[in-house]
Image (cartoon, rainbow, N blue to C red):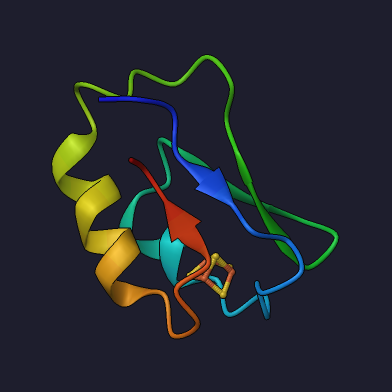
Length: 62
Ligand code: F3S
């Protein structure tokens, strides 16, 4: 699975992605960041859940 991206313009800092998938997403200064050296393949299920959980569709993993 490719590294997900966060649209920081769109992210409202709700924190759902970090709650659902803390191995990949981390809140820094009120915005979600992707942990660069996370294992995206191992976390693909929770990445997908985060994409669905994000209220503003700020996460992309195409
Ligand atoms: Fe931001 Fe969406 Fe995560 S609003 S904090 S990218 S769930």
